[in-house]
Image (cartoon, rainbow, N blue to C red; front, side, top):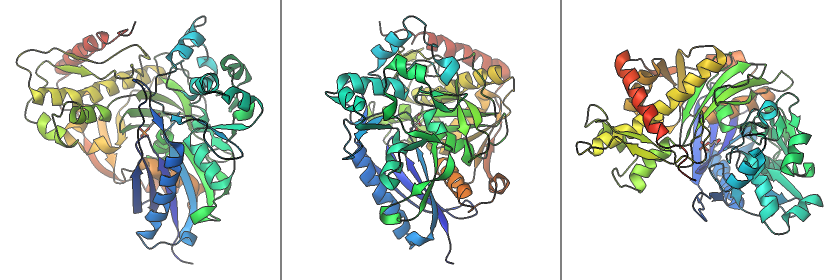
Length: 494
Ligand code: G3P
């Protein structure tokens, strides 16, 4: 038989990619396409789901063709995706009723406030592990039902389907209406104990159950693909951060990964029981491999890290490419007293304050653009520190090693600052595309391409590591200043 590969489709916030992996977990081919970011009003962010589907079809085909691989050489397809982004479509025509509402979109703030008015922001947390926030899908579905003409009636007649992007792609590929536990855990609608939709939450949010996909494990055959990869099993679905946890082989309780992209997402494996956070983290699913028990996780989501670098480039014009931030930040020895808290869409973990807005604090005539660049990098590190403190407190396990991945980890200065502020080792694997790798691993396991998770563990190789060099007094002083700057962002919107 000719050489076989596994294809991972990563449907992300800014682009869609397809990466082909071989049995050693090495990248054989990649193709990627960006899609439009649609901003109809301040705080609103949408995607055209049909444009995304066209891009996904194109990247799948292109990734094979550029490496002379034929469809029969693909053993399985795994899907990973931007989470929470919400779509409703007509089950007969496949026509979306509205653009997909993206996870960063804050239009549901009134819905969220109203749902929490009596019982508070943590009203549903005991069941779904999440605080009420604009971030999650449930309130976005409610917005579509209440605000797009005819949608509630069509939903009540059973004509519409809801999906996050995994569900949309699996439905387009196979015709099956399914999601996996990790994606379902980000809707606010799934009960963490039963791994099924929670009737009480659905009632409170006025969401008809007929809209919802079937919840399956993260690694099993959902159906066979049609189209270019006709007949190939679609065999994994994981939200991107859960896929990265799996791709980083964080299989043991206490293992933590941090993915540095437009935002940053830290996820800690907490084993087969959910751990309730008392410190502003999310309780979520890590992964569920077929019939094996589900593995739970604690997550600290940070909305703005890499996108702050983009903002410096696009809105302030201080750099012309994102990697230049490192060069600019290296022109100075420290932040010159300047701190930037990028609360562009409120603050996520551990604060969950939708009304916070960003600040640049500590400005004096001494501060130059190098200091600002440095403060931009430090913002990613201090936001990570806040999340790690919460993880340590919730899990009673002190972080010693953080496995990192994502575009920003190419910035060596940032990685050193991160190790300094965490006072922990930071390690980066050889295959930095851990999100796609995790989806490929889950799909490959489902079809026997890889025999077990021990084989996957053996594929993880360290490419680089950073160790703390900062004096502890300096760390404490800087953290104190950072916290003062954070206080200045709070409750800005009245
Ligand atoms: O929760 C949102 C997250 O899944 C988005 O990730 O990498 O597409 O920005 P990314």
